[in-house]
Image (cartoon, rainbow, N blue to C red; front, side, top):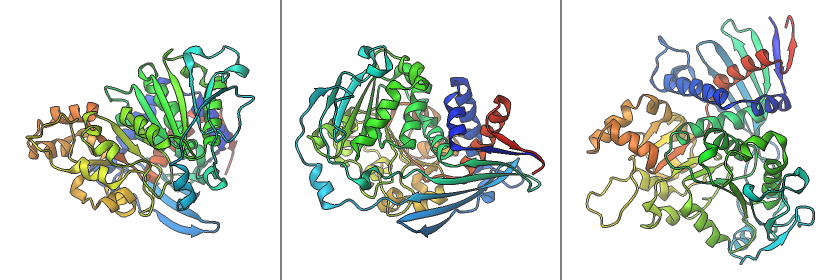
Length: 447
């Protein structure tokens, strides 16, 4: 039997070549696998939750964690082994820096300081030559630390086995993990009515793939992408890639109104700008291994904050002590709707959407700290069929599937993911198939 070997560089090259049709096909396959995970049995599918062992977490050296994630589908078995850096607790200096006042100054990419912490640029005024594409920027200095720029992308591998147990593929894990996480997070995003303004917390691989898939799936409808990151320099590197790389060219041109901005946490009128970004957002992607909330709950839980429907996705934290969204945001999401309030609020679903109920009840810091129960969570795989969520909506006095659709498309939806090995196996299978069809990677014959 032959063994297909795919490095991170090869996987990125393949994934960057995907068309909109390719991505939708991959997303539909993942949706079906998640649906089978939530509703299937051992007699009907290999994707059912019974066949997905809980992952094992082992502390590693240098403040790292190694995860062992076995999983199976109807056609493959496999295991991902990945080591991740654990985010450190914020220092008092970090907290004080976020209270500084900001200033901005015009500069060019070549003359800018690498310690800048706010930047904005529009694709509609971008010069044609790649070397000058960032020539009109709004910049301001920051004081990012080494800790803040440390990569938290997983390092490891995914091994895929046939149903006989014979290995048929060996894949590097970093690009694949970021891609499959963003692919799942954009299942609901793709169906949202309004995606005009997108806020992304983080500037690593997760953030890159959330931005790329968002533009690929709904680029014509997006006008603003705001990147918020503790390290401005890392965010600047991401924006430079987006604005200068040929592999992003067609996505940049999808909408002439599209513009980008960066907000660094190092200084600034940071609190005021952050509040403005969050309040105006239609979509919020949280992609950081944070141990403290990324923004105050009242930005969204206050009367003003609740007027607008948003889709919030939190995928960066994966342990009980890690948290991106303030617990009050989740508590409000599941709180009973008051029938006689005096303010117009966006619709709530009464539940938080998760990738895995059992995993999130055990490992998701937001879920644990908010004190949510299993009855207040619904798996995204169940929403594919909408049965459980519709029943919950009807029991709460709503409109059933009509109300559910309205909520998913325009209401306040919170999605929390800690990651499933099933996602790796499902997407990994498809990536290997595409690699073979399109001539990517290396093949070891007779392995």
